[in-house]
Length: 221
Length: 252
Image 1 (cartoon, chains in turn purple, red):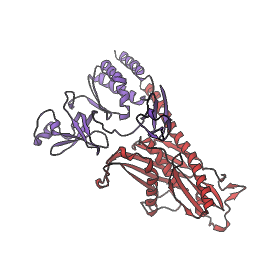
Image 2: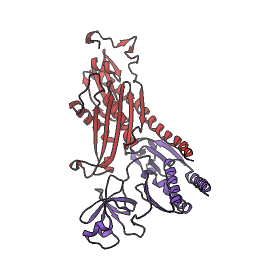
Image 3: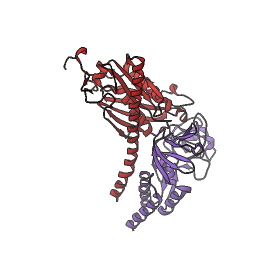
Image 4: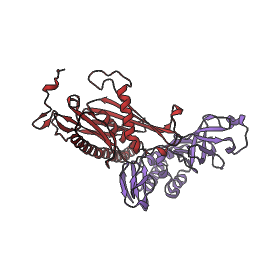
C-alpha cells in the first residue's frame, strides 16, 4: 500500500474521481485538507494524526453524564459537541423526577448516536442490549483518530483482542474504550491498547500485536 | 545604548547588510512542532531574533455563548507580546497594536480554514511573542499555520508569511530591527503556497515599481518559509514513529 505524509494543500491526484476522506477538489485536482497520512488506493484518503471527534449517526460512543435537564441527560462524549440522551431513549419507561436515580451526574454510559442535525445537536440512544450504564470494568481514552486501527479491517484487530485477551471490550468511536475481564487480562489489554495507539501508523501492526500478546502471556505462565 | 542618528547609518557594507545577509536573503528559521502537551496543536518558531510560540485549541465549545455561529466555527486569534520581549519593558496586556495584529492575522488564516465543518464551535489561536526583532506578525502567522495543521484542523492550504522592506533606497527581504526602525518602508504579506495573498500591510512609502518588486521578493520569501513549515511537519511525523518503538522495548 502506498502511503505518504502530507500537509494541507498538497496535490494528491489530477483525477477528481479519486477524492476520498480528508481531501477536497479544486479545478479538477485532488488536494489534502489535513496534516496526516495519505493512503493511495482507488480513492485517496487522508488520515489525520490529531483532531477532535465529530459525532456521526450510528457511532458507538462512551460518555459521562454531566448534567440533567427536565427530560434530557447531557452527556460529555469528548467532542466539541455534547450528547443529548432523551428520557424516551432509556430502555425503561421512567418519570422525569426519577431520572437521576437511573443515571446520575458522573455515570458512564455506552450509547449510540441516533441522529445529528446540521446545527450539531447530537441525539443519543440506549435502545440496544449492549448499550447502557457502565457498572464495572475500566474505561481508557485514546485519540479517536486511532480507533479505526484498533478495530482493524472488518473488525479483525478487535476480534482477535477479544479472543486472545478473554475480555469484553466496547470501543467508542470517540476514543473511549471499555474493558471488562480478569485483573491480569485487563492489565494486558490496557498495555496492548497503548501499544496500538503508539504504533497506529505502522504497517503489519496486527502481526506485531499477536506476537506481543504471545510473549506477554508466555511470561505470565 | 548608542544614540543613533538617522542620517549617519549605513545599511550596507560591501553589498551586504548589517548582519551579513544579501538583500534577498532570509534570516535563519527554526521551526518545532508539537511543543506544548496541553494544547491541541502547537508550534515554536525562531526567525532571526524573533522567538514566537503558537498554541491552537479546538474546535471546542464557544464561551461566551453569544459569539457562537450556527453554521460555522469562529476563529479567535490572540497576538500578545511578553513584557520582556522588547528592549524597553512593554506594559503587559492588550493594546491598540496587538488588537490590530490579532485582527489582521486572524483574517490571514481564516480563508483557508474549513470553518463549516464545525458549526457552533470555536478555534482558538494564541500567539505569544517571547522575543521581538521586527516581523513578529509574520513569525506569528507562520507558527499559527503550523499549529493549526498540528491540531488536525482541515485547511485548504498552508499559510506562509514574510515581509519585505526598503532601506537606503534598496528593496530587502525580511528586515531586521535596525532596518525596520530606520528604514523607509516595511511590507508584510501572508499567502498560500499557490500565491493567493491573504494579508498585506504597508508602512512607509514605495513607488509603484518598488512596490511590485517588494511584493515579488516577499512572496519568494514566503515560498521558502512554506518549504520549512512543511519540512517541520514531516519531521514531527517521522519522530513520532521512531522513538515510540524504543519506548515499547523499554517496557519489557
